[in-house]
Length: 306
Image (cartoon, rainbow, N blue to C red):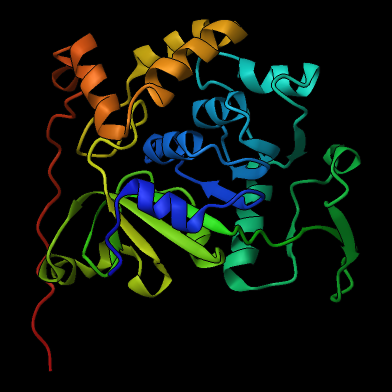
């Protein structure tokens, strides 16, 4: 049976010292999984993500991370990630190793990992000095006689955590909107936890097959966790909570205030349902404020064949 609660899935698949990828490019960022990892006090994790924004800032502040593998780093549209900055500059709560790439460098690592390639070539490091900061960026001679080209190694996390709109009980998972690198991360990881807003019948998945980005054969666990990405968003279900990103900038500037926030909003609740209850108590109209509205796609006739 693949359907598990979030605590069960994290306990079974996420262990100290693992390499974890919680992906989602601005959308589908699974904060509910991150909070459960924090609550279960996992340590020495290598956290991989193209944009390690607030989700990894919180995990670093909680002492979960040993290393960060990333491209863009920041609170999007706001500024610095103060918890990560404290870890890098001051070793608070402890030292944090960083491994930096361009966006396409991380994309290439994920693609190589999903394709089981020894490396992936890319042109975009020509004229930059990222290779001086990251020795994993190497150069090889093109076998076709057109000079040297940069290469990056594959990225194969121990665990990928992917949030999506829906899946069936087997784990056939459908996403739409800004899908980022979720598919490649899933194919390149040893274990995959899919977290969804809805679990639907297999007939729903079969009726719209082109939306199925992640097939069941790659999925180890399915977690039903509505509103599981707040303050991020899920296309068509709820919008991004921009207020929270501004609030986090103020909270995270202070180590003491960050600890107090974690104590109240993560350690102080039993699970994500407890977090959502606190949100609703703080702002009863929050989901009305974050209602996505309607932008319906046109129906498609797949036809009958055979």
